[in-house]
Amino acid sequence: MGTPSAGSVSAHTARSTGRAVTGSGGDVTLPRFDHSVCVFWVGAQCFGLQSSLVGEVFVVEARVSVPVAPPSVVGLFNLRGLPVALVDIAQLLELPDGAAAADEPVDRAVVALVLRTGELTVGLRIRKMELVLPAGQGLYHPIDQGAGEHPAVAGFLELPARPDLTVTLLDPAQLLSGLRRLRYREIEGDEGE
Image (cartoon, rainbow, N blue to C red; front, top):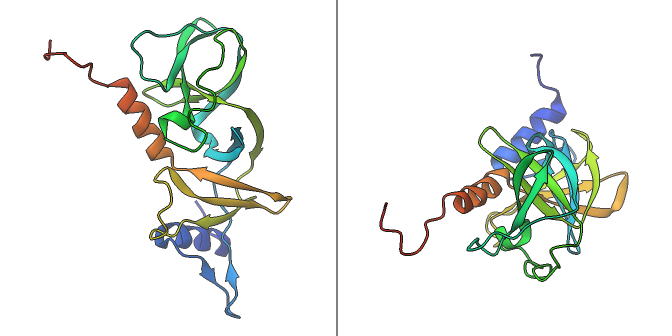
């Protein structure tokens, strides 16, 4: 691995300190985000997630409901022979518009952002996929820790090529933690059998 460029050092500094880097003239220089990001819509809000977690985008034509599942589990769908849980990301992370799509008919096609990690494969219900942003193309705004921002928000990305679009960057650790809680949820009345 070579020596990091000034831009990557600035991005690392901003991410680790939570502050923007100040240039020599006192102006604030926004660091570039050094990960590629899948940009997608949930309701009227644009979100981003590091693309290293995303396996694919899949149109779910049919799904079945799961009795006694938490409200954020929309159902199961067939991904080339593999049963995959379809999860409402807004309800899971308690984001705005979380209950907006809860009453969708089961026979209506939806779009799933399929996440793949070593421990799970799950589909996140999204409204639509916007783009895949290559590493270094977004200007990173870290969150102000004292501002009371939602815990699932890792920061914001400005896209120089799309000045009308600001992406709310989701914290992968918060998302995976929420998915683990769903996976290992204790059922009421279970006496540890």
